[in-house]
Every structure is written in structure tokens, then in C-alpha cells.
Amino acid sequence: MTSQQDYELITRTGPGTPMGELMRQYWIPAARSSELVADGPPVRILLLGEKLLAWRDSSGRVGVMDHRCPHRCASLFYGRNEEGGLRCVYHGWKYDVDGNCVDQANLPPQQQFCDKVQAKAYLARERNDVVWIYMGDRKRAPDLPPFEACLAPADRVGIRFVQRRCNWLQAVEGDLDTSHVGLLHFGAARPSGKLDDAHKDIVVNRAPEYRVTETPYGLTYGAYRPSATVDGGTYWRVAHFLYPFWIMPPVTSLEHNVMVRAFIPMDDEHCMFVGFESLSYARTEARTNMAGVHIRDNLHPNETGWYGRYRMVECEENDYQIDREAQRTKSFTGIDGIHTQDQTVTESMGGIVDRSFENLASSDIAIARHRRMLFEAVRAFQNGARPPSADEPHVYAGVRGGYYTTTAPGDWLAQHREEAEKLRRQAAQERGIAAE
View 1 (tube, one colour):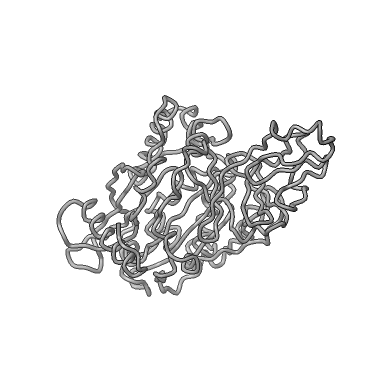
View 2 (cartoon, helix red, strand yellow):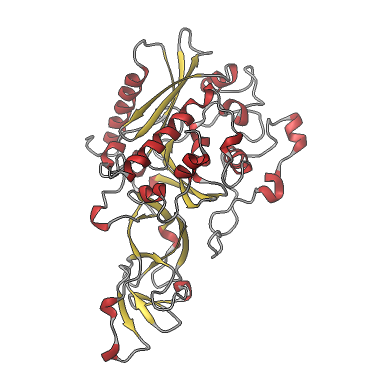
């Protein structure tokens, strides 16, 4: 890809855009179930450039629909959620969770035409305290994706929602980029510091080499370097991109990295980080004496506006609370928290990065391949092909990223898949679920 027009094809996700229509063929996590209360106020959801409302009716069912009343287009956000439906306060027209008009209060009974009015509504499902939305053809809706991190009981799944003020693609590419970990997050570390073996490897050698391959579910890459702690060993960091916006970065060891995260487009210049992590595997964080090397979400209380949910306190307006003294003396960035550091650099590129200004290097091979892969998938979709894995969510089962050190010879991808499959089956047995 060389032209800005090509990049526009894979960054824009609003209604009618090629990438947006492709994304609508997959289930999308959009809200916490706990945000919706039976007969309570609707919640504004901005998703793929569409202004939607999510609400829970009297019987507990979840509805997701366009915020505009099909009558005169007043916003249903101000409506009354009562007696099994959402009623517009302008003229009293009422809709159920499927978008069916069930009452037209300002019309005499003989003049009502409820059967001819339909609000734009989407399928909604709930799993592990998350509302998932399918924005494509209802008749083609597949099963929810069987990510390993989502298969544990609800009280054993950690969930994170964080808004990011940038295009979804640059956020995804931030997690596809592993070489930044040794600098952005561990740049102040020294090999003699208090680091576990895995993080010592990324500090001793901050410039890995790469292997990249496309898969039925997306893309897999392995960043590798000689191990600084195992004689004759190779330290691997393996990550996955899974269509259409899912990432499994190697945030911890392959054994414990039972997680998946997504960057869901809200509109073209805002996205929502949604992360799932199995709490059955307590993440082992690096124990260091450095400032900023931890994960935290410092969020404002949710408000009701379109951009009012899961906003970080640290932002461009306060320079992400950078501490220049800490940057000089203790921390590589002076910015506290790994997630905040990621947020800072991806948002600093602008709402949509001007890629004509870029100079990609060999360390960006996964990003370059990912862009080309997306472009080809969108073009194929425009020509009538179904998006990769959209109708076959089972291909996500058992996929796991993570880091590890090996002295075994052979194909890196086969070794990774074999070890990940062994760990998946072990985890399934521990949950009392037969491994498929």
C-alpha cells in the first residue's frame, strides 16, 4: 500500500465504509452488563460511527438500537424505559428490544400502524458481565467467539474498558509492536536490576528479530533474541492479531497469558479498549525498583455523553501527568503506568495518524504485514467474499500469546502451537471442561 486512499480503506469504519461493513460481520463487546438496569435509563453507546442506545427492559432483556425515534427522530435517550419497552417522550411511540413499534400513543387506535414501523435494532447477547452486539445480518450471526479468557466463570474473568482518543488501527498496531516494550516500559531498566528472567532478556537485547505468518484467524508473529538467562536458549515473544480488532500480546509468560483484548472503533478518532483476562492465572508482574512499571486504570466517573464512558484522567490536556524529574532520575518516560504510557504515544500521533510521515523499519514487519492483510481482506469482502473467520469463530479456540524461552530446535510456529495447545487442554481440565 502506498496511497493515502489505501490507508483510508482500512482506518474508516463508519456506516457504509468497507472496513466498517466488514467489522459488522463479527460480534462486538460494547458495554458492561452492570451498566444496564431493568427499567433503568438507557446508556449511550458510540460504535462504528453509529449513535446507539443500550437498555434493559422490564424482564431483563437487553436492547441496542439507533438513538433516533423512527417517528420524528427525537433521541430515545430521553425516553421512558417502562413496561417492556422504551417510549419516546415526544409523542409516546414505544419500542421493544427488537425494535418493534408496540404503541403509538398520539394516534387513535384505528389510525395506528405499528406493524409498519421498525426501529434500527441490533442483536445483543450477554456473557461474563459484557453485552455483545452483532451489527450484521441477524440471520448470519455466528456464535460468540470462544476466546479462552472468556470461558471461565464470570467471577474468574477480569474485564477492562478504557476509552482511547485515536483511530482503532493505530491502537491495535501499538499492541502489535513488541520492540517498544524494552524501551517505552522498561527503558530505565538495567540488566543488573531487580528483573525476572523474561524482562532481563528484553533489557539485555532491546532489538529482536522477527518471524511473521498469516493464520486462519489473522496473523501471528514471533520476536526472538538469544536468551540472556538460559545457555543456548532463545527468548520468544509471540503475539496474535485476530480479526477484526482483537490482539493477544505477550504481556506475560505463555503459561499465564490467558487474555485477549480489542480496540473497538467508536468513531474514526476514538476507540474503546476492551480486555478480558482469566483470573485463574494470576499475572506475575516484573518486580523492579522503577517508577511506572505497573498496570493501572485511573478513570473518571462515567458520564452520559457519547464520549463519557471509561475516560482516563491522564490525557493530552494535562500532558498525561508526565513527571520530568522522575523521567530524569527514575523512569524512562516519567509517565506512571504501562497502560498510560501506551495511551500517551498512540494518542500523541493524532486522531488518525498521517502515515505519509512514517518511516517503517524492519522492527515494523508485523505492522506492515498486518496492514497489507487487512487491505486484501477488505478488497476480497468488497468482491463478495466473506471476512476471514467471521462464520467460523471456532478458529479462535485455544489461541494464546505469551513469552517463553526454548533450547529446542525446529519450526518456531509449530513449537508455539504445540505448547499453547498443551496448556489450553490443561486449563480446560482444571475448569472441568472437556478439551475439544
